[in-house]
Length: 437
Ligand code: FCB
Image (cartoon, rainbow, N blue to C red):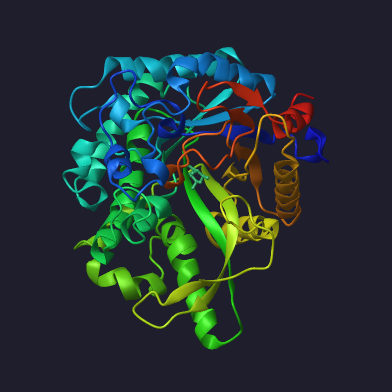
């Protein structure tokens, strides 16, 4: 690691991120079934049909895990609260054990001097709500408001920051158009409705949290830098469509109260009636923007139905996920998001990291290089005027990487999925060396 804290602006925050279903162990503590359990149980969806029933057993090992976060000198821990753990049926009677768990977890962070950064929803939709159509159902904002209130009445007085929904693109597009994540749909109408209801739910959740007197509220979106495969008008237009769907749809709703024309071209006819009237809710004022960044895509035109794009190959090195390593994309997105959407609002890089086939004894130098290069990109963005205020690494430890199961290792800490032993990797030690100073 080439950096020290003093290389970043005064007060810049460093942290690590995880999410509930990926680490907790959903079999424990009275959590209700989620759509990830049924998605994983359906052959062909998840590598080896792996699921999050045990995961990293963080539900029982959370104190040791918080010690690891403290010992590396992190300022912030970005965690999420499972809807199905707190409300096993999605609505109605809360599970007291679930609320107690997050209460203890937040107190545990505070006792260790770590700022709790809560994300309400990181993908484990209660099955009872999935059965009612999940994100396609226009009642989702109402149910999400109830969930927000249930969680934040309990921990909202102590969390440092909060965001409603992790990565709307993944929840909407990846899960309803690409079919790659639960509920595994491939349906344009479902996609349009889900993407809109996600944003309305976000807005309602922000309103509820403001009503409870909470501050430091944000939105966490994922972004990919996009490069056209050639300078033909067809490839340029295809790249613009990809960019609009991936990067501009949610920012457009949150900060401008509009959706990009390239997206409306395909999704417009399928949006719920009266969607234009929902922007007042969607645009609820925010205190920060969260940027999750991993990679870039090179996009070319493809014949066929909208959105008419396909991925073109790259010659740059790839991670274990097959994702191109492209730090300049982080710099350019931070600058563009601030200039074109979020203005002076602080931006936090809420996720960045890489999967690597790590073993406990070989140093993960590839990850150290990846983090170094992306931190340099953050510095360049700051130098160019982007108000970046924090950087959180994905992820504290190896965990359940959704449809790719336990094989893809994103952790700073190695997890042996038989014994569940945690072993800090060289990247953990490298970050710890300068975060502690
Ligand atoms: C993000 C997700 C996170 C993890 C990383 C690798 O899209 O928020 O849960 O899967 O990718």
